[in-house]
Image: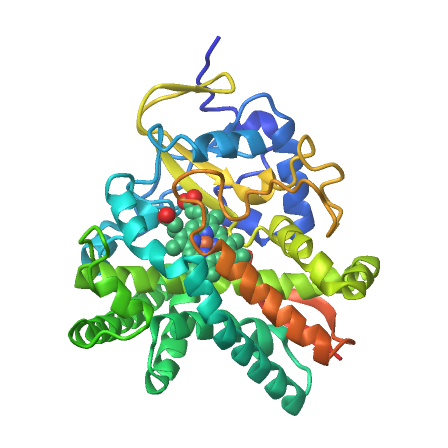
Length: 422
Ligand code: HEM
């Protein structure tokens, strides 16, 4: 019989509270152990949320921790809606008014229209045109790394490539790039954490200004390019496609902001955790280096599975629905825990083992199957492959040193610092 388990949390283990920031402070290994215990339970567990100043306090959410549950919710967008927002806790209402909305927080038909327009940017042809730029950027990064000497893999390598690639794609002129870098640093310093009120106000203020200024910049570019289109992405987005569709100025601004948020931290954290995984698993590293082209594809999928750079996204239930015996009602929230789904022992044998030859590897690191599956997945793969090829070709001895310094977040599995040597 269907049941509504709103009070099950304590029955699990009071120390496991996914709605509490303290949980996300714990070492990764402990968090994965907690998820393993949650996966054993018969039903998804409900976690009530506390009230947080300035943030709309959610009613709480059911944690989807099994692979099958994350897949089921992802492929059923009519029941599991991405509106009003997929981030958890929900952003304050004014954010939407100020910045417009991004497609990741929309359902069809609005989502489908935007995805149709912007997916041109990620076609195989566009990606193959970008390869030369990605290689040049990777080469510059390794040149500088050799000149400076090894210190921090994040700031010297991983943080540099994705942002450069996004700027190349959008055709952001060189003189504006420093501004983009600075603003992105500010806006990604705040991800899913709940700091003290004064700190939050200050960060929110900086964040708003940073995003606002970036959007203004890209909209100005859009106006210029629509008058004199070039071969870049901005030109393509502001001139009509074959269906006569184009982005409005506001949509262009929101899309650029989404790319910077979605495409930056994710790829960089995969690489930063990746170098550490290859160091901690010397036999996997040797195998990769024995035939880079043969093994790199599998190695990247395994890094994305193992790291799960985005740890969670949320959905809102639109109609009565039974999920594995749990009765969900309209308005209920579910949170998809990708990192847990990616360690589900019923899908991935020996899930804590990093194995670049894992096959099949149906991880949900890029999201589950469905309309919101990561638009940038192939671009991310291409960036990571090019960066590691350049690194291992020119610095075959490169290795991580010490433990990574992680950012406190319930959203990005983010590395702030990772020592290296070569
Ligand atoms: C390893 C790197 C990456 C990971 C792990 C990742 C992960 C994800 C995930 C989990 C989603 C699904 C959202 C959902 O179902 O609600 C997503 C969506 C998205 N990603 Fe990525 N991403 C990565 C790289 C990138 C890059 C490089 C870009 C672009 C430059 C990008 C752009 C997007 C966009 C635009 C969406 C929204 C798609 C939609 O709503 O239709 N991502 N990504």
